[in-house]
Structure formats: structure tokens, C-alpha cells
Length: 382
Image (cartoon, rainbow, N blue to C red; front, side):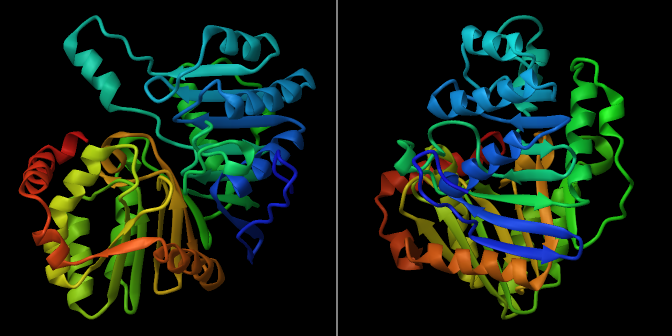
């Protein structure tokens, strides 16, 4: 595949897991060309959802790709979040005039009952997923905006991770999309296009947390993997304010001589989350957890790997908003080769990190320490 600037952009790693092919994708340079190529290959259906959609260069590039397939007779369905996205009426009109069917997820309205307004602000569609013909799927951390596009393509080059999946698990990724489309009153679907064979879960699983029955599934997957760790737990998370059970699991693993290392974002677009996360550092360090802060371009990835056997890439942050409220989706891999690739990516990212020590924490200015304490008290709202 090639980037829009013509540079070759092979996947970071490609692994075959049974009847599924998984490609680990690093940053927009690898991810966006792969997504656009998949869209161009669509014959019957495209299901695309994103938390952030902007009508900048990247947004227009994707819009043109979707419009072209819609004009060719492909049923193109697009969900964009009402809080995260920022697009003009003209941009939306061009999409819809060419047959792209759109669903504005929970538009934010600053009138009406206070309770309803608060609910709309709290429950967002934070997923980033793309399904093409029920055969090719993507999920991960990248939204559709110039922030995530590569510097070579005149973007901001945010550090992020995505995954391309080809095979049976894509049907579950598509099912989650369709469930949301139907429940939130999207346009009527041509149901014949979405008949997929039922496939039992294998070593590649898609997990979401949209409804009451599966609300805790992503958190449970993390806790199960952490609880079984014998050698290492490596986390890369842009926004890190995990619930108490996950904090305890990390600390217990470290005390049991498991190497627990976390890469968090010093370069971030949400500074209060960093301040609040630093309110946890002392406890983690005392338990033996290694804490690193990324200092390159803004970090936005959400990945984990345990014992070079289990790995996950997805949209969910380790915080209350992702694990309890927002719509999220993660791909989970129980495969040593794929896990090794995620681990290698983690180790490479460490080169751009500063290790946090107890001395560094104590030497911070008093004002910064107070700010961190204050933000930590309001962590559930960040």
C-alpha cells in the first residue's frame, strides 16, 4: 500500500491466526492508506464509525472514498459522534447527496431537561471501526482528522495504533455497528446484504461494551489477562485513570515479580487527565510498577500485551468513561506472534519515554503537585 504522498507503507506486522489475518498498523502513515484501500475494494457494504470526524484534508479524503463507493451502489453507512465530531453542513450535504447514509450519534443540545443534556454529554460513541463487505475490518485508536495523518501527508503525526483484520471475526465487528445503527434509528438497511455465517469465538475476538449484558466485557478481559500474568504486563494508554480493580491487579502483579510497565502520555491533548494520572504514580511506583511518560508527538494509542501471549488493540482507554459509559470496541488476540509484535512496538516506544521515579515525583513544584491532587479527586469526570 502507499500513503497519499506516495511513500510505501507496509504494516508494522502481519500475522495469520487460524483462518484470520491480522495486520498491526502504526500511526496514520500505515493505517489510513490501508483503510482507504479497503474502502475502494467494497462491493456491497461499508460500515464506518468514528468518534472524531472533521472536514479537514483527511476527512475530505475519506469522504470522497465513501462517496465513490456509494455512487457505485455500495450501501455505505457512517456513524459520527455528536460531541467529538466537527463537520460543516456542506460537508454532510455532499456525503448524503452521493448516497452516503449518516447517523449523527447523540447530537449535543444545550436546552431541554438538564438530566437529558448531561446524559448526552456522558454517553458517547468512542469507537473507531470500519467493516467492508463483512470481510475486512479495522479498529484501534485513530480518528478521522489531520491530527492522526502522517507528517509526510501534512498531518500532525499523532502516535497511535490500529489493527486490520481479515476473516471471520469481522462479522462480530460489523454486528456491533449494526446493533448501534438500528438502536439509534439509522436509515433502514438492506438486510440481505448483511447475512453472515455464525462463527464461534476463536483466538481473535471482538469485544464491545454497548449494552447492559456486555457493559463490563472490556474491563473483564483486561482483568483476566492481568490476573494470569506470569512474566510481564505492558500497557500503552493515552488516558490512564483505571478503576480500582485494575489498579489493584497491576500492583498485585508487580508485587508478585511480574514486570509491569506502563507508557502514558506526557504529550497529550487533554492535560487534566495527565495531572489526574500522576495522582496514581506514587502508589504504582511503591508497588514496583514501571511508569514511563511519552515525550514525542501526542500519544493516543490504547494497547496492551501480557506474557507475549495475549494482546489487545482498540478504542477503549483505561478510564471510567471508556469502561463504564462510552461505546467502545477492542480486538483481543491470543496468539504469540501477534503479541510479540505488540511487545516489540512497546519496547521501541520506550526509547521516546522518560522513566518516572519517586525522586522526580517529589521534586515537582508544589503547585503542580496540588494541581495533580485536585485533578485526581475529579478523575471520574475526566
